Amino acid sequence: MRIVWILLLILCLIATLWLARDLVGYEPPIVEKYPPSPAVRVLLGRKLSSIAVEPEGVGKSGRMSLWLAGADKPLRWEGRSLLIERKSGVFGFAGLKETAAALELIPDEGFFSWQGGRYPGSLRILANGEETFDVVNELPLEPYVSRVVSSEMRSQWPLETLKAQAVAARSFALFHTQQRRNSPYDLLGNSRALSYRGADPARRAIQAVLETRGVVLQYHGRLLPAFFVSTCGGRTDRAALSFSVEDTPCFQGVACPHCRLSPHYEWNATFTPGELKEVLAAWNTGQEAVASLEVAARENERVITLAARFASGRRVELPAVDFRLAANRRAGKEVLRSLHFTLALGPEGLVVQGKGWGWHGSGLCQFGAKKMGDDLRTCKEILEFYFPGAELGRAYGAEM
Ligand SMILES: [Zn+2]
Image 1 (cartoon, rainbow, N blue to C red):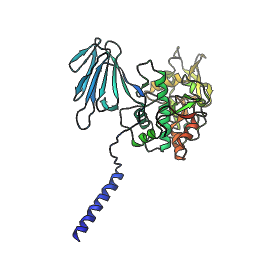
Image 2 (cartoon, rainbow, N blue to C red):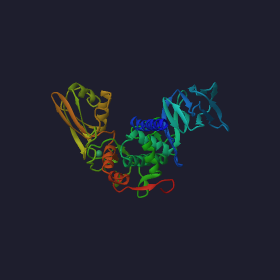
Image 3 (spheres, rainbow, N blue to C red):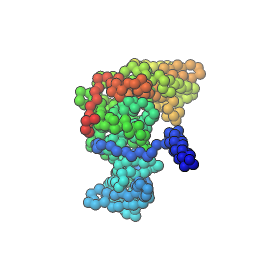
Image 4 (cartoon, rainbow, N blue to C red):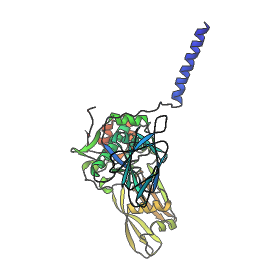
């Protein structure tokens, strides 16, 4: 009888631990396994003079091969951080001095760490000047897309939304690998367009990538650089306003009723007369008081040109993009979060009321895509809404 009680007690303990595992959000470590995909080259650092790179091993210090440009066999490195420096046109590392113009580090176990981040793939170190070099991470596209999805969206968002983001990011990245074949890299690491940080992707981001593997957005069979923006604020912009792209129907912008619940849907910013004068300093050659500031040209919601009038009556037109840059630079933060705004200048200063958030306002609206996913719309429906006339195609990989 006693043994039965003990068994019951053990069973209860196991059940409690199992439940507690869910409560604390425990997830076993992720093993990433993707089908083969083309390589993408991401610029992680530019004009650096030294870096410390560490190969990652499982449960022990890692190892890596160091290939010097032109060498027929690699040098081997095992252990902790490897410090690489460049001085007077020479790379110095591991007690060696090398005049090669480039090195490639290939970790045995597929990962390296650098500046507190963990990255898959290899690292290319390319001389860029006598004292400096650029650092380019080369990795397959699918693990790259997982990391972009994971840093662009919350992993709890609907899976169809994450899948739409995966297809958009894959299309954007692949488009650039094709455009930049003759350049040393395809994409910027943590750019304003695509966020790629040295962090492991969330499980659901990986799932979204695997469920859409190789799928891209196309227009008449041609790959589209599918842009995305956090919150469009009610209407997405024509892409040609921010990018040099073909002005296709899928890039004309759409009315978006889906992002109203976004925390970035509405914003406002105020400038005292003194602050406004500082923002307009580049156009205000006589350092006069600002008499008026108005929108001179608009395309749908987006402000294209502003017109400022100064105390002497002099009138200057300025691109809204430049005004936004000047205002944000003066404030040291993004006070003007988009170009969808209205202005009111009074004796107290300038009040700007705006909508949406993003350095451009084109393509997939991420908060809108979240709402569409909540409303049980599919990845295909979300993408067709934001890119009208575009179709889903497969750039590589087997049929799903
Ligand atoms: Zn929107």
